[in-house]
Image 1: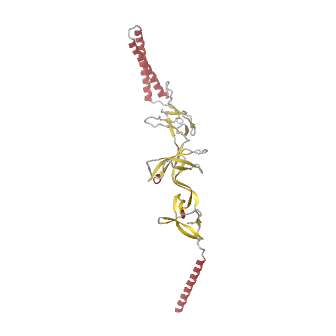
Image 2 (image 1 turned 120 degrees about the vertical axis):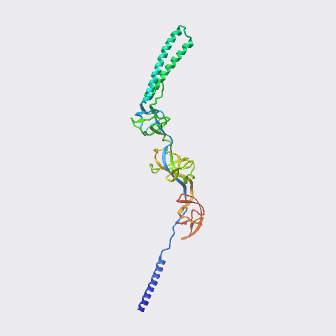
Image 3 (image 1 turned 90 degrees about the vertical axis):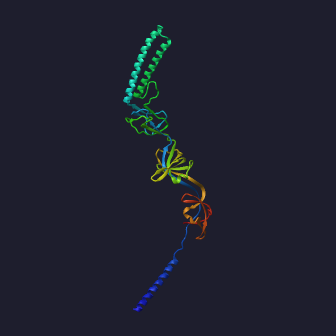
Length: 357
């Protein structure tokens, strides 16, 4: 039994020895680690933030009627180009019963008063011709006659306005809706036969058509509160429009809201930017767009991939190749970064190579 245990121990020890020798052999046969290198390069670096929003016309007008009634006829369609004064719609007036009865009563009263004044003037003229009354007294009756005559005309005009939307003595036809701007009809929310409400001090009124100048478009978007302090009016924007692939549009930041809005716990600030239109491309109102706001830009500068940097405390370093697979750490001064490439201000030359991380 003792001999067996000794023999087993020898066998195990021999196996461990052989295994160690074999492991060391394999280790010595592994290829050495070869580090890849990168070179500094010249490029443009743009630091930017992103705003999302939409494209809208700068000037957009809702055309409304001066009278209530039913749309009798529409003269334009969506997409039509209109000029100031072009006829948009005709409204068939449905008179207010109370107003109509009041106007008719006023006209009847005015006619009665006019008839009385006419008869009285005829009687007074006979007396004046016989020198019974003075010319001054007679002129008072002439004046009263003229006033009563004007009252009849005013009452008739008022009744015409209530019934038809226009009067005999007025050049304005209030039941005709005309464009007040040059532009394109973006939306016509009513149809012939639709009842509409007039626009006045107490009512916004029914929109007959929305007209906008499509030659002057702006971007309306929002930026987060963490970014709003880094932007200012006059900055350049690069717009990417979802509906137009492969094209970008230049824009200039014009407005930043002084007040933020809480949107699901995040504070957002409204911005507006004037868009430079491109020939051959039509920007429709309501297109969604993403704006890259250029915060800072460097042209033709020396840069490396930001992933190749090392950080030790406050120092920024790279490993510079000094020989075949030999590297030394060197402190560099960095500048502008776009998150991928970073500017090298000092500490590295364009013809040097660095370890790729």
